[in-house]
Image (tube, rainbow, N blue to C red; front, side):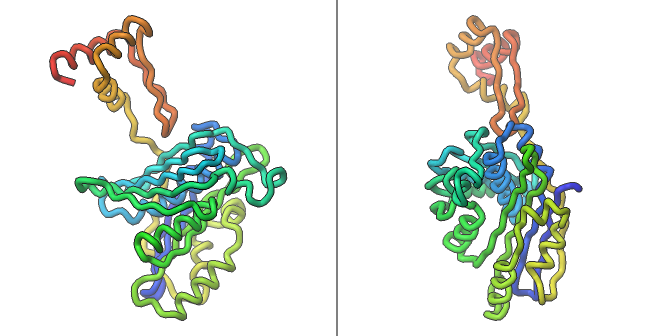
Amino acid sequence: MKDYLISSTAEGQARAYVLQSTEMVEHARVVHDLYPTSADALGRVLSATALMGHTLKTPNDSITLRVMGDGPLGTIIAVGDKDLKIRGYVQNPHVNMPVEQYGKFAFANAVGIGNLFITRDLGLKEPYTGSVPLTSGEIASDISEYYMSSEQIPTACGLGVYIEKDGTVQGAGGFIVQLLPDASEEMAELLEKNVLAMPSLSTLFKEGKGPEYVLELLYKDMEYKINEKLDVVFQCICSKDKYRDILGTLKNDDIEEMILKDHGAEAVCSFCNTRYKFNEEELRIILEEKKRGLA
């Protein structure tokens, strides 16, 4: 089943976004050769980025999530846009800290202590960046805290990734549910009750339950409507031309050294691991354009 996100509203007092991201997270696992804990962590951040990216206003806007903890995972980065094309990577792809060996705080210890940074690039002079401390290391509760502290929006976030014993991702997804202005106390209490009663998201998606099923649980005993259903994919926007432009920013001496010593150059995209090779002739053209002031 293809990954997708649904958006909804309930009784004019709440909104929710629910995402199935199993294929996206499995694709990221394969592309980056992720061990289970690394796949779990990146999967949660990719899913959160898709959920938050849906709120962007125009196709040119983008959102970047950076989880910067002092645990063995290192930095986790994901970027998304309005069209829900998501990409990302984790600094250390080969981390595995199973609960059986490291205890119930294994995941939090893998993330460590640090901060969550969320940057929205809305095409203005400067992107806007907000941040919150990593209070739990579970990512979802940190997203909720960000919305409350930075945007004053009461929010509950849930994220889950189910990884089989063979290391493959068999279920992934998440939700964000928020109270709208003037929501009643009764609505707040009912939503809180439903969120607290929510079963394991990773297990739900592994069992084939889709976003609509999760939405029913979130909105139990409420009237609601689904407003949109959108596809979600892991897709990078890198290209050889972009890396060619980057090479054009290097010093002439550095490019000459690549030609004479290395007889070429290779660039690797951190987000998708695509390799771009430049032979001597291509580097000479870049160097000549620099000297002529064209690069």
